[in-house]
Image 1 (cartoon, one colour):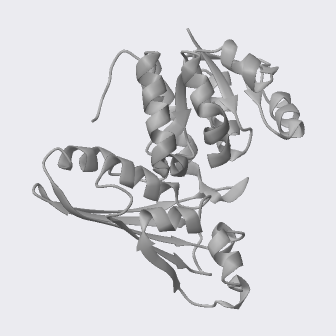
Image 2 (image 1 turned 45 degrees about the vertical axis):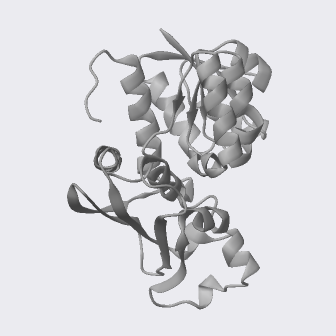
Length: 270
């Protein structure tokens, strides 16, 4: 049975732990870690099988795979340590992987120690088609994201430009640029831009538009991809996580689905 450790006990980490605890994922939750130990204690109270609250070093030593559900900073701090220890790594904060130096280090460590890096699709659909299309050639990838003011609150772009989200009453374009700039501007809000870039034509050529809409009750992502294969478009309206409106519920479900895929013999989809 796969032994799993979780770094980050926020909205996504909690859902993944519950899925293991209820046997949706056929694995054992060995340990959890969060910078705020209160988050760990709160999580353990709702689980039937109690994992250990471990230091990162102890967690890495005792599991087969570490699931990062925390932040880009956590990927930078722990990612290479996980892989050098010969353990697999799942990254939810995909924006960290747009740091080309970090990505090269992680890939090199994974190759040297015969382990894997998993990046779930997150809060978006269509990555299977994008990966397939990229085998030939892709000419254009555009992501249009619409979120409520609560879903964008606190982002560096909002703070640096002194944008008063409360004063916006209609759907308004806040940002337009490539995926690299989008991730720097909204690091906790558009990990889907990073996932699209990694699966497709890269962060410099993936175009991103971010809207705020006070009437939006869901996080909306629309993608357009054109290339030698033809063209496809997709739209997904995600229910925000009740615990964190910046996070879509589907992002947690995507992590759960990826762990299920790892632990099950039948593999479906690209």
